[in-house]
Each structure stands twice: as C-alpha cells, then as structure tokens.
Picture: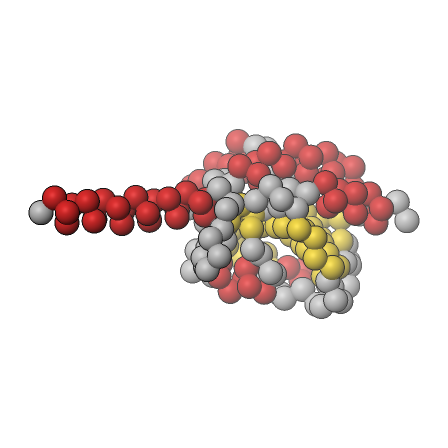
Length: 183
C-alpha cells in the first residue's frame, strides 16, 4: 500500500512540475501548451494577409480585425496571468501615447475568465481596444498567428498584411516601431 501511495504521489508531483515549467515559460520539448516568455523571438512575416477574426469587446459587442484597416495594428496577445505581459504594459502605454495617431493596439486577452480580463484592463488602465478570445477558440487563433508564448505582438500594416511577429517582451519590438514610424 505504501508503494502505491508513493507511486501516485510521484505522478502527482511530476504533473505539478510539468505545469510549473509550462507556466514559467520553460516548455518541455513535446508540450502542447502555450507559455509566457521573457525571451524575445522575432519572426519576419512574408506578406501574409492577417487572418480575420471577430471577438467580443468589453462593452458586449464584437470587433472584427478587418474593421481596423487603414492604420497599422498591433495585435497584442496577452493574459492577466502572464507576468511578462504585465511588465510590458508601461512600455506599451508609452508607445501607444507616442504613436496612437499612426497605429491602433488591439489587446487580445487569452486564458482568462471574462471577470479576470475586465478586472485586469481596469487595474492596469489599458487605453487601447480590447477583445477576449474564449478558451475554446484560442488554439485555432493562436495557430493562425504563430503564438507560441505570451506576450506575442503581431504588427499588421494598413492593408492588412502581417509584417512582423514578436514573441516575448523584446526591446526589438519597440525599436522596430520607432524605425517604422520615423519614415
């Protein structure tokens, strides 16, 4: 009986360790989870049109990505549980203030309940557009946008084409925006 308890305890501890590793951004090789990450990974896009989506807003209506054409759009995949997302908000706010006449930010909350999402938007006073991706829709949307970690920021040009994807809280994202908008 003691060996059976030890076996089950070992299994439970192993599963907890795997969960903690995934939550901290140390993704095991064959894990199917999406994690948060501090490491930046920049992906150059190949002129792909950003896949359109329609998600619920804080006001209860829906917002379609294609309705934002004509301006640069930064799609920010984030969650209230993601420490790197939260740590990046001050720099995002400064960037938004600096370039809001040239771009729009669309925050896409992931892996949160509606209450946690709305609370986080209020708590961190996020001034840009916000939508929430229901958990059932996240795998498909994350795959379309190559989201492998949080935060992930996707830069879409005014014609609706993806020009860059940045995974993690990476200074290269802000440098790219400064270069893009100084032209």
